[in-house]
Image (tube, rainbow, N blue to C red; front, side, top):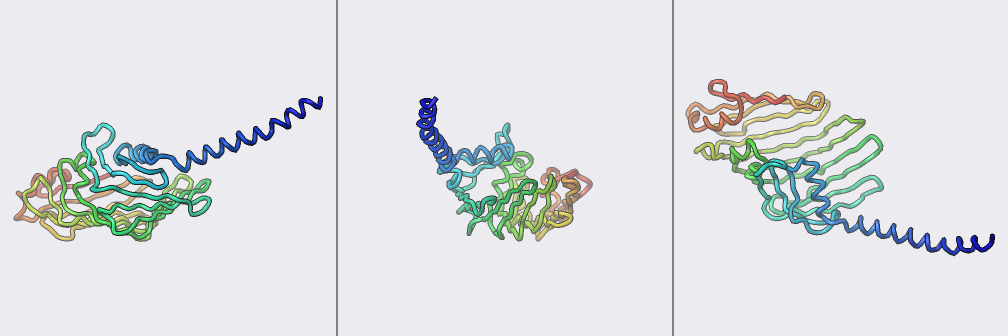
Length: 265
């Protein structure tokens, strides 16, 4: 009976060696996971509307071209000028920090901190400003591919965080998007105006649309009820610009005389 015990004892170091090699292989695979894996994750999470194309590097540190599309069956797509770079690293045993930069549109990195627990997940975004070409929206398909918006989209994030707790989502902080000096192929008038869309989190999440200046007047107010957006707004043209903006008003919403009604939810 002593000989089998000696054989088992002799095999033990080999068992530890194989286990260590397998663990090392798994850690190496995780550390050097190719950037295209992140691209697949982003594509699936966005239903094919956001793509990371020509990805280089790893999941943890890499770059790619950002492309917006109308979805899996859409022929519309628009690429962001230049490349977007990212870096992901753990900040604690249950937190990951993500730093993103797109030199074309960001003066500094966007910092995100993701935390995970058994029933609670939280995403915090650092205060940030950026400016994007409005022509990117055409990649999202209908109705943006018809509008063919031109101008600049200036985004500002302030104290923004999103929390998932036992299946419920809560938002804090504010997102402000200014659409500046906008134009469209549907109108000969250039520019048609500048607008502000703001989302403010709290006990009730409020979405507000207002006109900063211009011949096309946009306004609206909305909020989330049971996770669904309810928004009521309107679009109208200055009396001397009604003809030049008629096609655009037909696209924006349901015509009601000299204005268009915008309703969601």
